[in-house]
Length: 368
Image (cartoon, rainbow, N blue to C red; front, side, top):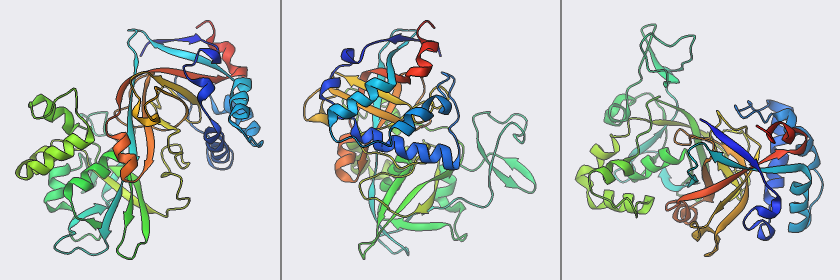
């Protein structure tokens, strides 16, 4: 996708002087440990590499006691560039969160909708083993009788495909709750004794994600101008006889793995393999961008995340998603629980995207 990078001054970032980017520095430290002790991030097509970022990660080890000090850190180590897509349309942001769901370890009459672990017959697919004629989009398939085929979809699974395999992690009260955890990709599970466990994405069937909100808009059931997670949930509650048919429209199905809830203040470990920093983590198109790169996001119309003020916040690229496509497209992580869900559900806003490039690498982008 064609786009230009236009160098700007930090003083040109709307709201920069009011932002406190200290939490982003904490996240940079976690990225440093990941890329040095575990595995470097893959470089996106834009070309900002882990090697470019390492000096900044190391400098983030210092102590920053105030917002002005934190801003000075970024001003000293980065050059901001405005991302301008070739069609000159503005960027676009949505938001996601980590739901909290009441569950039971054993199914009963009320709690009978499972979260599943990855099945043994689900295999990764790449160009070395993809069957001829299979959609190149598929990254997962089913190994059966020595051959790889398309994995059964959401409907087939929910009608009982996986019963008896012992894959159930826990059971929720509502099929709709389970569906929205699939959409978010993670959740905190709350058990009757008050204990909490986390589930995070492990794999999926491989089918393309199909938004049920778009389906309901096309059918005239929900107004496109006011669509939100809340309005979609409301429609499903009001039309229980149509829930299966609408949810099955999204053939994609997610499998999970269990994880502890470590720091209560942080979100799940996402694609960058570090915990998400609430309000400061951004899902980006990983084919273009590299994890660990800061972005400044500014939106005049997005006001409910900051008490009525236009959104202007430094964020860190720490996740990705199948719907996050393009150089100026992002998904904001709002946090965990019901309040975070209320914030996330109505974010669908035009926004200006500014990428912060380490100073040593910035010369590569000033004229191209």
